Image (cartoon, rainbow, N blue to C red; front, side, top):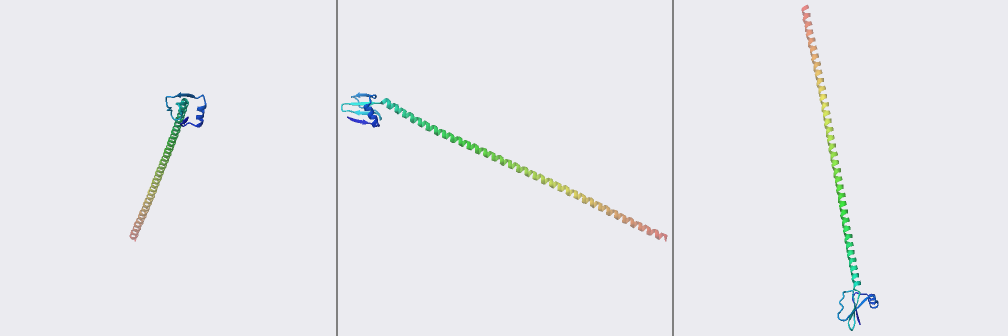
Length: 179
């Protein structure tokens, strides 16, 4: 007897040959062409196969399902990772956008404050210039008034001198007449 075993362990082969729970089928007219994982025994007279097709199929289906589940789980994990990355990127972008907006607002506030300070300085300078001009105008008016007063005093003195001269002349004439 020649025993051919494809992808079957020695323990499984022993179980198949010695365990009556396995369904055994005698077939002298066909050569066993089961897939890998099936046990084939070639005898001198004919062929018989110790079939455990249902069990093998179930195991294969279970393995396929497990593989599919693993693939699905891996895909889900990858998708979750991608979603988390996208969410993190979105959060970072939002934070960066908020920070940029805050910086822009701060810059605008600083500009406005600077403009207000410049306006206040200009207003202060204008007020100072106006006050200086007013003071200069008042000083000029005072100087003009002083000059007018001096001129009036000079005129009064000149009038007095003229009157004194006239009086002196009149007295001289009277003295000459009395002589």
